[in-house]
Image 1: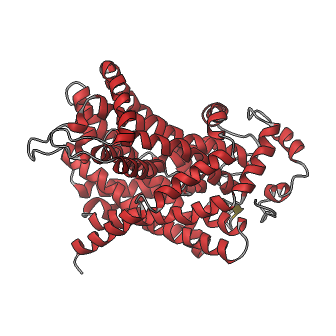
Image 2: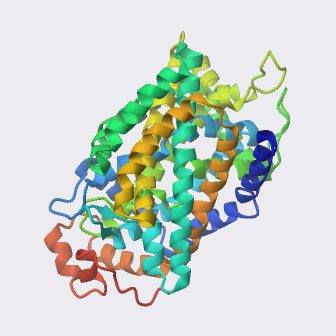
Image 3: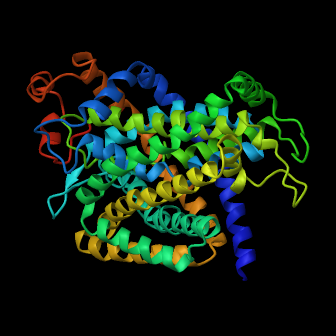
Length: 493
């Protein structure tokens, strides 16, 4: 079988997994169910959660490897990537402006999923042989769901995550960096490959503490840099913003009619690509962010769950919105490529929108540098996801060889064509979500019950460690969690 045929098969499989009859309703349904079960927690507790994650940043004296802020930036590093630039353009380019509305819906509902998986990641974490915290779906599915089902779900997630990390979190990101630097600044792809490989190896060999230090300094800068560029364009085009919002909301429910070289799309296309690209961007429901959350120094799983929830807000409601509004407000989404006479390619759309909105070459430069920083940070975040799952499958001895191999694979991604890898990675990414979503639904009772217990006593997230100890005393599973023993789950309904 040649590579073209294999890519076609993989794209067909990926299209079904991410299609409107499989993963999309499961993702949206799970997010909606958890939103209801948690009483709209993502809306009511967003303010205190942002304060805790971005201003307070740490829980003094708590057990863990990195601060809450570092856990947040590590997860942001993995999610704020090419999906925020190319993924948004793809959704709008195919589904029309209405797709951005469905990306917002995915983000808002996904915050409940993100909270739940991060809560469970901390709730069921363990201490590994090196004294580091290790958690995520690969553990909480098995520990929280008794019997063969939990074990099968946990192992399935670990296998899919390891495979996916080399594709969506490594080669495809390196390839995006190399191709953009070559096109923009004529940097040979092999040079980019060498630099990225050395950078990855230096950071990754130090483990999560090294990754946390780098992302804590790097991620806020890259997000602010990109968002400021987008805000400048929106201010310059402020008169077009009301019409852009009107178009986004109206076409979310009607589809997009043909304009120029644009073929138009039905509402189902807007929903499909809005949700699929939204999840690709923020990873809510996939379980990946729970792995970073599990390493956090936190005095209670609820606290880190709420901090991790803000990751989806920052990724989708802030960064994705900036990209999408720039594309729609500048009219770039319906721009015609003179070389083809068709709608401009989604791969070029964001760059063209920024170029239209900023003077000189600044737009092109900002998008290129933004994509390079976003993709490089994604490599760091996903490396940690991969190593925690390798540790689950093969033990601690496999972690260092994995870090070295992961770094070397970056070079391959920079220097080869990746059509098959993209298609395969998309499928594995979707399959990661499946066991996690099943687990979130099964464990939703535990999440809701323990969340209510905590927030009834500390609604503004201002309690210190001693106060938490006092009101949690006697709660089933609390003493086990403090010692990172396997908790007694009890009733989950």
